[in-house]
Image 1: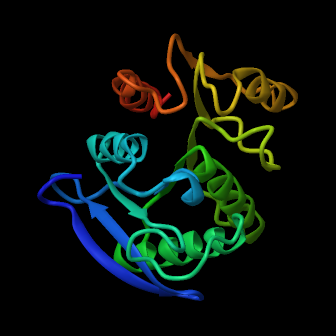
Image 2: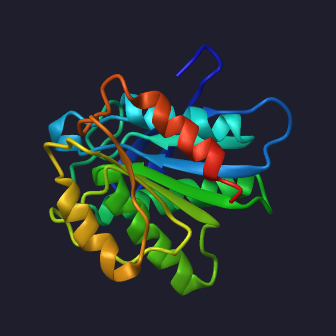
Length: 207
């Protein structure tokens, strides 16, 4: 993301996992995990939306960490349809909790990454250690089965998303009574609209 991004490697069930960490100025006030879009369609942790989410959390004072899913970049293994990816994200969270004990945790994801983070939150909730809040951008509703998420989840979607229609996200959010922030004119990758993602996350985080 910038010259200060720290790269490191974890060993997961399918092999090496390439990770990137961005730190705020001063001691972090929390940990934020960022999950990237679909690996089989060019998604990586360097995706612009994923980097924008990382920047938003760094601005909020969080240690923001990303991971290349299995088979992407220097990460070993093969795509596992969200199952192994959720396991790997849980491993990354455990690593970060060791590095920064006692800090609150935020989960964020874009597209396929929203599936992974919603599944991880479901798992953490069952364990009694849920993340404090989720940020889901381009939520992959209609394409994947996504578990229910907490009422304070920040949902951001593009009005003209050609990959995941806004109507599918509204159909998923409606039974949960979840508000959806719609960016007018934005496509799936928020071309020329990325600043809105960061602005909304930073502005809404403490509400």
